[in-house]
Length: 141
Image (cartoon, rainbow, N blue to C red; front, side):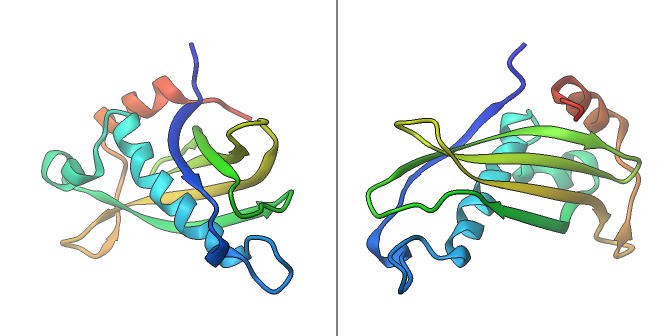
């Protein structure tokens, strides 16, 4: 089974550059954040329906970006991801940003998502049906 999910494709534009002539660190976040929204749909758990179907949604609790190799204007990127951990009230994703033409790894993103009950405004246990779907995609490190 292929557990890496193809989440997002994009292009690096000149306005992503900083004064050093490569993509500035602040522009990685939107690419990875958008990919995380796609992650839920790719897992069969569309974020747009999570609250109505499961009574919870998630909030990002921690995000760590590792910058590996700079990107230039015109570079095409692809972001893929896996479920890397499943907890009681949270799960974690590991995403990679790679060059679409060469496969070179440019950055990684590790995200912890906490399940949240908007009525109580507190973290909530992960519903079993969500756990079951995530378990199918889990790639332990």
